[in-house]
Image (tube, rainbow, N blue to C red):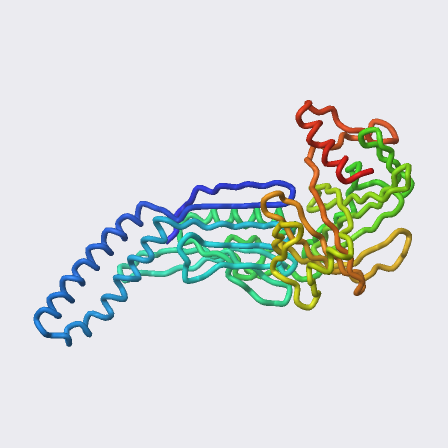
Length: 386
């Protein structure tokens, strides 16, 4: 049903979206054939009813089912598109606007051990062969899951999708038994001891805010902030985030949250949610809501992570779980973190990618911005940092 597609790919620090339409010229032929087929059946059924021979209708039931199936498939091929989206460690594959029989897929990227492409071959009666390709996920629990199927003799496209997803998630590719085009001996996977491992994100620094240490100072809009405390969050995905407690000259607490994914960074200012607002959320760790309202905004559940938190100089980590809810219009978020059964709630606002410059001296200074951007960004900090 699918042929080679034009892939629309959008990627930033936090999201990867790949979209393609189902339409191929063959869809028009199928649509025309289904219209003729169903029109003929309508005439047939009408004649049977008019002639008082309802028994003839029974013989057409199978043909009606085939006609409806062809019509539905052709409409999907004409109108539908597939959206592959990764955001906040969640892989979503949806087909819309018309529901497809294989349904949508939702999977946490923390469950994925490897992605690979599998080829299927079918021989027709006249001896010609047709090929289809599946994008499959080998999960850490041993399950092998079909994520996406594309029928085409051109396998390069689905392999391109596999490669982009693996790069974004941070999966080191290794051959899997049965993988199409796998470069392995006798088509078998590498032994477990020889599999490439995901690189720990703490092995690489080279980012001024991410590499701040306790006692460092941060200068923002002529406000001097001291790094008083750091919490490091090591997730099972291999990524590591850091939460910084910053103190102003009047000892006011400010919070900076730096998220790291495959060497890409995003920075947000946060504030702790007061207790009276927390009570309105009604959040329960054993039954987290899909969405909730806070200050006339609706926040939708976007991700869940598990890992270990390291606070300050403590040598041992604390078991940690984290839920993130996103307000879709503004991009603001609520972060709920469970540190060994102790819950904390934060509201966050992401800063622009170019907000900071690299430090020229010991203190960090802001980049020179145009007037409009400067005013807008100062408002972000003035609202959150004192």
